[in-house]
Image 1: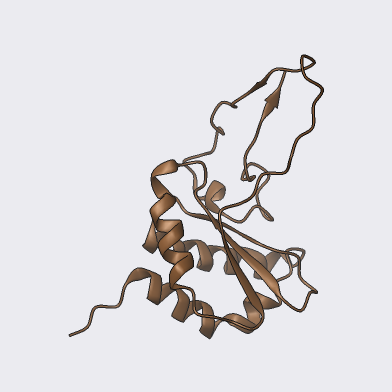
Image 2: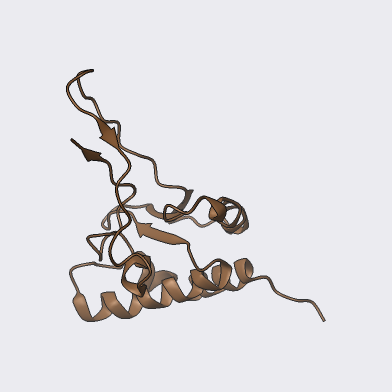
Length: 143
């Protein structure tokens, strides 16, 4: 018997639900919670610490970003899941969230790593950045 990997299972689910995922609208609260829970549940089967984000809707090609959620040991899981993604005409799968460039005049600020999010261990923090205020690509505290 051939064992299907968690990555293949996730992408099979993704393809079956592609129309709903592509048209995902974060302003529709009822559907948003159910859909985000389903995506998070599938990703957690690959690695419990993976996070994700949908790019803006209303574009011909939509982004699906998979990231480490600030936990460095999940790098291999992000890479393997992104590499296992089947080619899709309407999707661009992106491994890792790119940080926005911060331009600060030197000597004006001290940039430090933040303390952990108070709800980091909760299910809420593992949801899409579009739905939870604490789950951002990375927080930098400027003092």
